Amino acid sequence: MARSRAASGATTTFARLRAQHPDAHCELDHHDPFTLLVSVVLSAQTTDVAVNQTTPQLFARWPTAAALATADVAEVEMALNRIGMFRQKARNIVALSRDLVDRHHGQVPRTLEELVALPGVGRKTANVVLGVAFDDPAGVVVDTHVLRLAQRLGWTNRDEPEGVERDLMALFPRDQWDLLGHTIIFHGRRVCTARKPACAACTVNDVCPSAYRADDVGRKPPRARRK
Image 1: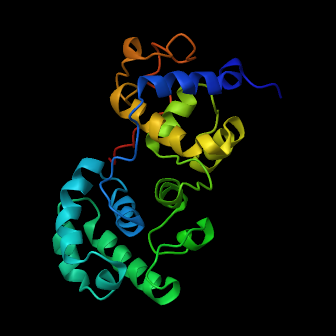
Image 2: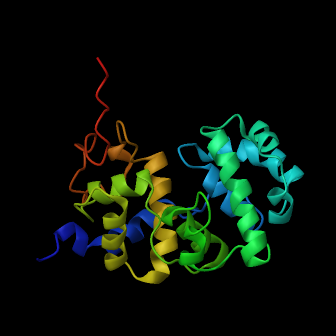
């Protein structure tokens, strides 16, 4: 099947988005692969701002995998109680710290397979760590922003993260995968928001198939209310 015009021009469109957001980067505060890994796990269904407000206290008390591996889960819960799903996340970061100590000498592994074997770590989290900490992405980070914008820009017609990631990996060379995710997330947070996207402020509105009618494209359908 011939690629759509939008998909064929994807690299040019991305270059223009990159020019609009030259400072795009991972917005989770961290100082090493371990603090990045924990921060990304904590960011699930939680804003980066909320995570960044929480992690200074967490890492001041448990700065390494060895320290967090021996932590009391109830005490970790207390440190995380301002973010969503804090109980489950507390269990996960203590468990993954134990795995890092027991299986990886306390170090964050550098392969996708080893990362996704850790508690609470999925493909998206692993891709963030591999790209940001090690500059060696195994794929494209697909969060809600990337999924939404990839659909709006005509780069995919899929609606599940795995399929969207495969389409993006086919469209862009590997050396762009990490920066692609950061740039699209920046654009999704600042311009192409889920509701009322600012199409007039978008530098690629002339090539976006969804321009000025994107409000319902790439958004999850509302949940049906229980009667």
